[in-house]
Amino acid sequence: MPPQSQGYDDYADGRGQAAPGYDSGYNTGQVYGGGGGGHQGGGGGRGGDAGYVQGRPAPNWGRRIKVGALTLVVLVLAVSISTYFWADSKLKREVDLSKVIDRPSEGDGTNYLIVGSDSREGMTAEDKKKLHTGSAEGKRTDSMMILHDGSNGPTLVSLPRDSNVEIPSFVGSESGKKYEGTGRTVKLNAAYAEDGPELLVRTVEFNTGLRIDHYVEIGFGGFANIVDAMGGVELDIPKAFKDKKSGADFQAGKQTLNGEQSLAFVRTRYAFAGSDLDRTKNQQKFLAALASQAATPSTILNPFRLYPTMGAGLDTLIVDKDMSLWSLGQMFFAMKGVTGGDGTSMNIPLTGQSVNGNLVWDKDQVKQLVEQLKNDDKVTVKGN
Image (cartoon, rainbow, N blue to C red; front, side):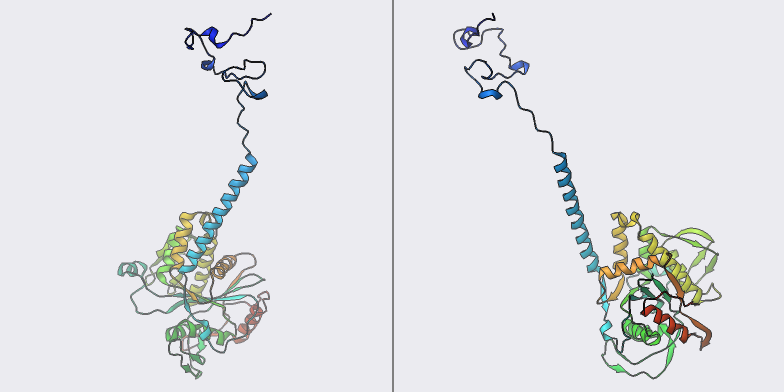
């Protein structure tokens, strides 16, 4: 039979102190309680859970994953919303299309008038020298394109700046005074020089019959900054060419162009036999490549590339008062789609004739093209 349990005093020296050599059991990690037949004296336990320490419950990984995912979603939404408002605040909404009179009826899809100006605003003397822009005061249109975004794929139509067009009746953007049309014809870029974006839109609408929904303009410096912020644009140049006026000096083949080289590429005209027509083709090719390379995960998902690119572009864009950041994004992706299977790029149809050195549009072909764009039909008209 096992020996009887001894009381605490049996192990003490009579003063309530533990006798020499006594081990209470705490040094071994044991915990004594009063349940399960044990002694119910000092430090006794409560009921049947005595004699052991209850372990930690296993972590609820399902709940943790859900909380983590929700936190990530909230964080992404917060960053996205703050980015949207930051970017939206940078747009320069300076063009008032409500001042444009006698406008054509609306059609299907959305039409953007994209303008590259020779504005040197914000450029230093060193910038002007580096980019071969000269130091002319004011600004003129260096390139003009209509981008149609519709259900049959995007269509990009270049309007040569030397196009022979009629200046219609218009209301002055600053004076508010109405100027009656006299039938005079000028180069297309003269409309911008005469009374700015509003008269340019009015002239394009009058001579094409196509309503312009949005206006987007970028100057020399902003164009170069966007390319540099992206780390350059890769382009395949089929034939080597040089142009002292633009600073172009390119070898044939694939290469990555920086901002300075890109500006030289899209501005070159004197190196080509076709002059302005060849230049507009280069502009279309470059803008499509720019949009295609910018709209990649390596740019969109990388804040170290996305924010500098957006900052460089949005700071220099001039748009109409109704342009939203969403519409600008749609324009951007439509531009990217121009080089896709459903996209079309072309020069506006020409007769091959000229008036005072100005290129004459083929009115019948232009009319057919505009009808196809208005109805959002597949474009079958071929440009020059």
